[in-house]
Length: 196
Image (cartoon, rainbow, N blue to C red; front, side, top):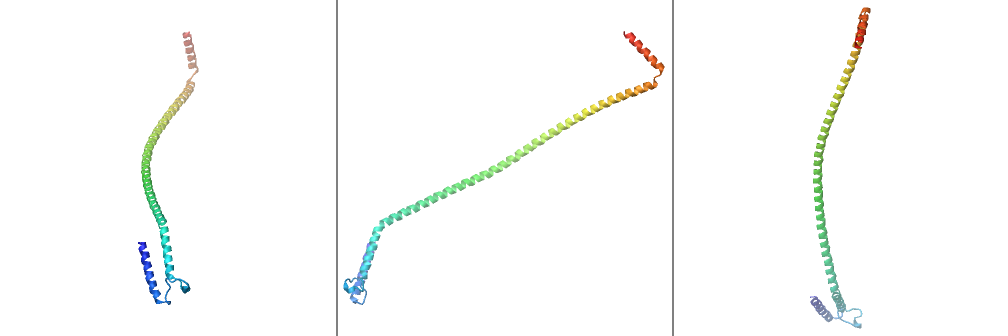
């Protein structure tokens, strides 16, 4: 295909140049060489040299350029593949983290529920223990009150007995006459004598 383009270009240039050569010296110098054309360089030869140079460059650089483009295409394909894998990996990690967060939310809700239930149980246990302690304190207090009442009653009885004895002594002394006292002494001596 490229050869055909070069051949068509060469034919067009040559036809055009022959047409201009017939026009005489007043036209462009396409192919003329020598001292007669010092002021008019040969444009056809310059173009032909240029096209040959471009063709040689194309021929020389075609394989390296094709290889470079193939390598570059492969690198781009690999980069795209790596980016796709990285995106899939990132998406997978995002899903994993979302699942972990959901599980953490579920665990937090579960722990909250467990703590609430445990708190209720501990509250019930504390209330029961407080009730038992209150009952024990009330029982101990009642026992202490009963003991204090018994002790106070005993003290009052003892004081009342002592006071009764004191009053009885006073009453006896107030009623004691010398005859009664002599009679009592005589009865006491007889009782002692009979005991021996």
